[in-house]
Length: 403
Image (tube, rainbow, N blue to C red):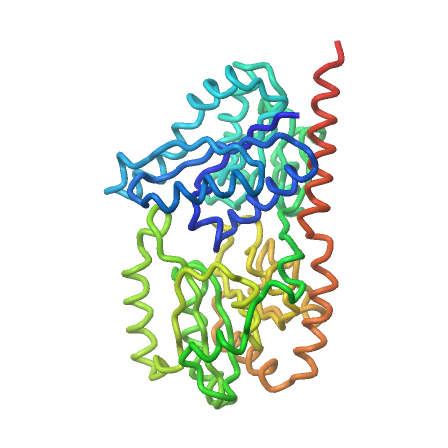
């Protein structure tokens, strides 16, 4: 079967360190199952020839056919770049289908409103279409303006909470499916992390430090400022506490990175904890990064813009890390308080400080929670999820063939 996957922004930097990597890993797993996968995404001319080489290398190694829309003409205005990426695909989808004749078109998007765009493909091309809703989008999810009869074959929800919202909002039950996003667990089997000792020695982390790791954008909604506010209390109870912030400053969605980093650094300085924070940029080896952590934190204030749940949570679970996370929709599908992690009320810095301090002080609890997390993450193995999605594709194609 030929599958066209339409996705906003799988350009190389995002594949390395963001939730979009879950979508890309799924495409590779589908290709391994024998599906002919075509990916329509965007690239930016100004990012350099190395990224074009990345596409060529990945095509060779993964047998995925990439089709890229070049947004270089709006590179100077990142916000325009971001929104333009949502408008261009329909024209390219029509062109590609006329050439390749796809069996299924599968679009991943950040908003339920874009299910209307997916439906356009079906009406124009008469081919089975799937729309995966990846994020909790403010102002659209749950809005009656975009509910009920959307002309797609399936709307896939990556969390059960999304599924419930759409069903309550009037979407047809036979069109809604639940299929989570997963990760390649083989990356976290201890064979691919690399030399942890050498990696740590290159970092300005004091010997004997207890590392609390944060992975994600430097943005208010990601909760990094809540962690910064909690830091002084954590250090008082755990004098060896040290914090590593791993992020990915690139263009497109991440246009506020520099100013947010300056704001955060000032915030840390005012609280006298600046020297306890170390910033890492552009880390591609996530298993190696996870290996340095004693505690992993996911202090999100909102899931808006997050792929159902932070992919970094799955990666921390697969790494057997003790986790402290916000008690919000999506995250609570992964983390059960006291069982495979500790939950705290979003934006509650004192409570976050308390939970991190507990784990830093209790090695036995860290080990127990980490072990449970490793067991619980197995159902999010991308190979298993790819098989489920493959069956969905085959079912849609079979139904489409019935006179």
